[in-house]
Length: 90
Image (cartoon, rainbow, N blue to C red; front, side):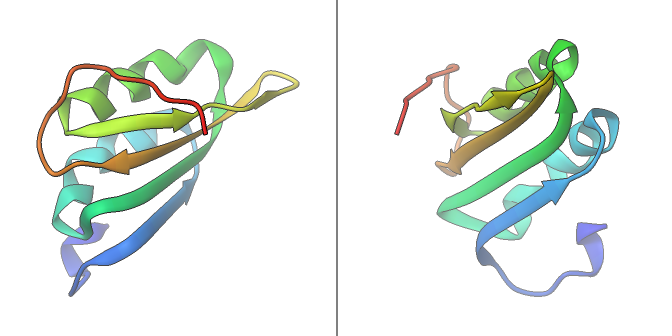
């Protein structure tokens, strides 16, 4: 999906199933500026570990992970290079 996008952005939001988010994550560094925010939602609690792992591999830091009734959102910042899984609460 990101292959047709021209330019870079301060923020990207994805409200879709975990499987789709995981498949899209490798494309996001090409459209998100370093220091940019990514907000993912639409995931059920038992699947978020897959997104968290991929975020760390790609250079994202998780800032916040709110949960409600089994549904999870993840707010993260893109550092531009892979990091160890750091987690900070806003």
